[in-house]
Image (cartoon, rainbow, N blue to C red; front, side):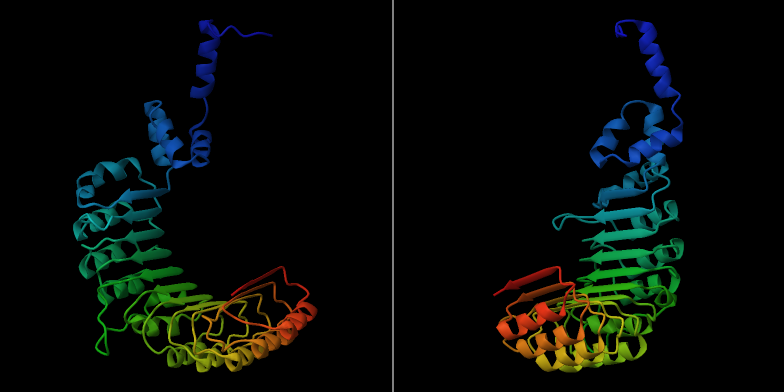
Length: 350
């Protein structure tokens, strides 16, 4: 049957079909679209504008200072947002405490917050935010200027926090006088902690030690001697299944401490030149569940056949092995091939 699209009766039928589609169905359709397509759909009619706004749970905003002027109207439309990203470029003035507090009043159901280069935020603003958004589950901060008091306010109020990622938090005081961070009520729920490029990352020690459900710990380019802290952490937190260490001061003593984590499955040792065959062997002898191992030896020649042979003999479940700047010989490679029957990925870069 051919349809005459010039016939107004058929056009009305098509229009009725769309208009009779339940709001829930339209919302499901919008949620499967890209951000750009959602914006275009919101311009079709007032109904679509309303439904698109009420079904948007994720929002990313340019966090320039003038954002504060539109926060009331913006969050009147997007009133069910649970995941929010606030990003400001380095050349602009970011939002301040007043804007963040206003957002927290409008988004009390917020579960995820990402802050990037919000350099005007202070401890006071973060403290009020934490009291208003106690259901927060994930917090990611990069290049912000609030400090330990703001961080502790989040940890003291957000009892369901599961993931914490901190990069270049400028407000943390360096040296022995730095205020310790944590543990707080969040320590009982935290599963992932990621610290990057912190002058005094060890002030997070109380938080890491107190996070008894911690599964993933990632430390990237954080100053200080980490051996002692890793010993304290692994004495208390034995549930760790994934550890990333990159460009931090850690030796075989730290690797021996990590060997207390018998459930360890993923280990990344990247540019940690003080780690040797001895430490890797001590770890592999106890962490028999290891599945993924990445080593960037930085051409220090301190990890080679001896450590890899220990891994091959003790970790039969190994599925992924990445070696960068490591110089294994035929001896260790043959034992790896023979003992690690589940190996799916092997990468050797020199």
